[in-house]
Image (cartoon, rainbow, N blue to C red; front, top):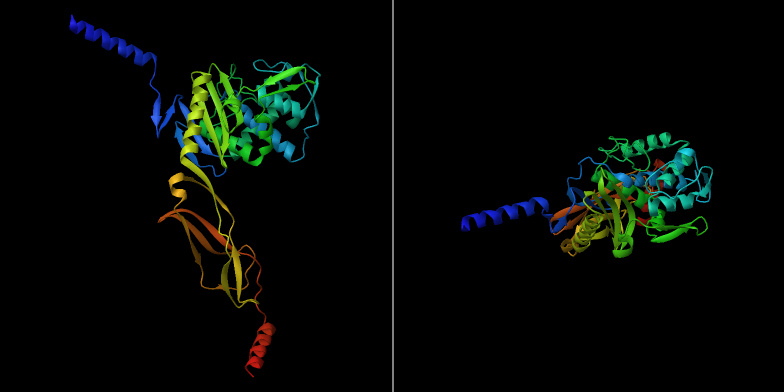
Length: 381
């Protein structure tokens, strides 16, 4: 009898394991999604990943690319936030999340952007695409070209909004989503003015927008970016948060619920903020170098600040080493590389940066040499 009770207990335990999958732990992170990636935005450093190149349906996280192209058009002056967008039949026909645009309705680019960012409006995404590129198909071509330029190797877009009920080829990966998210928030930071909105209105206050990204209200430092869900994709998000200068991007794809998606994003952020620091490496003192045969015998070099993400335990062990040629032959032009600075944590090299000439030093002419020789002779006299 005891044997049967033991067998029954084992079978019950096995059923629980099969019905309730055990979360995966790695590096102290509890991950409850099949594909995730955590990236530091400024440097592009990947801090954690799991199946990051697995190809999956992105749902409305697609709109990160849509917004990237729209903000490129805004920042280049091609369109303005105050421009009026006229709604087409195509845009008004979109289902899913929407702001119920009507054919012929006019709405500003800014209100269209808010509609896409805050409440994931599919109709507004199409309307903006048509306004920027003339047609949705032309805009999608631009999306795919931009993905290629960003090195998004596992991505193909079929539309601007992520609706996937009629397509099997609208696909991307966690790594690729992180790449386009980074491009958007680093090079077009004004988008964060919209992704941090919790509630707003359009149509003169007649229509309320509430952010689909609950993290911007309930997670300290959260500043974006875009959620997504379809039955094919599961629950997805490209979430962004910033603390103490450290801007993180957490991508989650295929979670079973919005709660698990958001919880995984929080845990990834907690891991990143607890273990890493953003450091801007720079050398403040003057670096002098000798110039042979120039109108000046010596000059100063300069270095550009270098962004680096380091484990917190290494931040206090930073040192550097200057490596310069003994002499540089004129002419020397401003920007010429004349050496390098090597940053180390104890004896481990963590980064290198060029040291460049801070000014142009022409080669001394024959008459210049003669004048210098005479001057030296007279001084000896």
